[in-house]
Image (cartoon, rainbow, N blue to C red):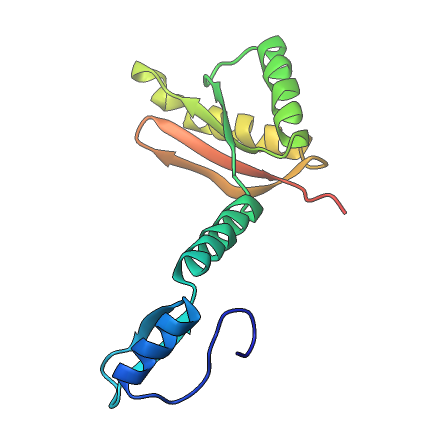
Length: 153
């Protein structure tokens, strides 16, 4: 027996079955199209358990991206802007991505330039906390901009 639970050797299929039963392990067909078929003698339940454990570890290591949204109007007042900017700072410090957008209601779409100026001002003031991932872009009645948090060194 070599390694944890693997028996190495070339056996015809019948002998391999007998050998696996003697060892109390499972005979697993690895490559059925090969001639002769390639089989491995392993503890299959242990193999499945270890595979699930590896997948769980990989899933735990994967980073989860949280996106927080902040909504402005084209004529947002200074106090409201400052209040929302403080929330944006907090979100970026926590490591969440920020989606800032200006929503144009009705005829306010004529103030596209005001909305863009507002978003660019926000990006400039949040420069120390995050970097702009996507510049302001108009999509229907929304002008959207994404800011990603700066990575900590």
